[in-house]
Amino acid sequence: MINLVYLKNVVTLRLDEGKCTGCGMCLEVCPHGVLKMNNSAAFIQNRDACMECGACRRNCPAGAITVQSGVGCATAVINSLLGRKGGDCCCSIDSDDTGKSGCC
Image (cartoon, rainbow, N blue to C red; front, side, top):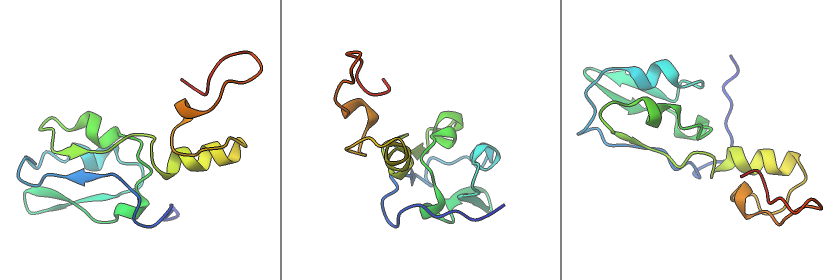
């Protein structure tokens, strides 16, 4: 697998190592191998490879991970490819001809 890096230092991913129980679920669901295990707890190995999908947060039984899914560069890249303005959030895009707004 190619090690993709999106934008440097913009990812919202955070890990509270004090809450981590070392179950490893975050490692199982992360599509880019952002997290690794160190003894009995996870740690963030490559924050900039995170695409902010939120799989780690949704699957962490201890609530040790926070990430604002879709607000970072993944959404910006998608919106850019779709020719949308304002890459922060697809919900902030102005209405189109049909009166529907963005992707929400």
